[in-house]
Length: 449
Image 1 (cartoon, helix red, strand yellow):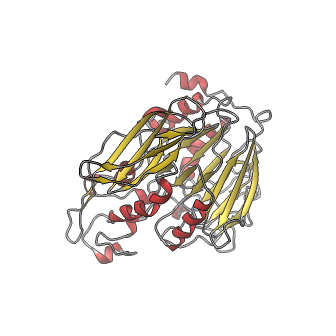
Image 2 (cartoon, one colour):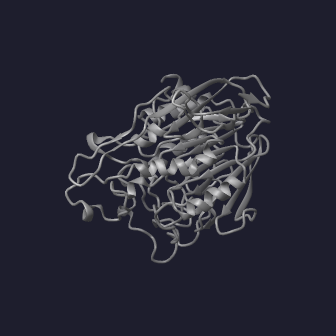
Image 3 (cartoon, helix red, strand yellow):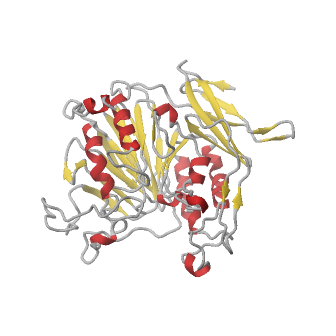
């Protein structure tokens, strides 16, 4: 069933249902999937088998159109309620979703409840979830939380994860994401290692990814359009080196972006490159060194990250220097999580971490070194809030992006502790295509791929 159409251009969507839980995403998924298995053949650990995960691919949809649907099997009978969702507007320089909600490190806590309540009240047209979805890996397979796995199961070689937490999270989120498309990128809590060296199984099975349609062979990186915005979703916990598949895909994807149709270019991945908090300080430096130049050369406007459990907005920056053509970096890892907030700044006395402690084993080796120029020359940390850091605060919350036209966008961050309509941080982000031309020096490289 459909109503309120504004265009006849085809669109894609996917509806995912598990045990009566339904949600919507942009782009297709596999037409069907078997149940999800999580295996731990070790004493004391409990295995898990999900209900059958149903993926329904919808084609030929019209942009900016309201569709109604139900999930289930009428022959049993076992049908869901009637839900509805609206497709994204047609791509074009004057066509945008009204409000895009951005949130990271969500989990399923009291803070999550407040975040989603406030986010829903802002009536978003699209939700971006920047990694760390459920924190299921912080629960033992018997369902209890544990901060000491070796204490609970000293003979288990694998850090276990409680998969029913994903089902609880889906039921909690259903009221929102059965109606509003959600696009997700993986975080470190989605790794969820199990037997046979399998990782990211729940993440890759439970969400829709337009990978094939964007030329990607992976659920860890893909792209899609939402009106006049081209979104690039990148994976920090797989190979991101210049010789790898993800980097080569990124080169091709960037080269194919038509800025006359999608003027705004937005990139997301989980761990931030530019964060001034002590937690995870310069943790993803290896990824930055590999990819930053490429993103900068194609004029990425905004970058969304999570991972750090706090909020921070940067000035436009490139290679740690203020640059009017660099992206604005927005860290929104303050959705709810199960862990604590990040409150210490690396630039405060006594808070600068030892460089050897900063790398994450999944994001490369030790790449962060002392700064060689600028106010922090010869040091690993600044001794004051860095110039590239514009605003930072340790509060739970979410953000709303409202693109107004091809050069202006309004970004608003809302704190959980405030009333729904009170603004914690707000800024207009302005594109200057006449001053910041997209570089084409890499095009010859891409032609050779």
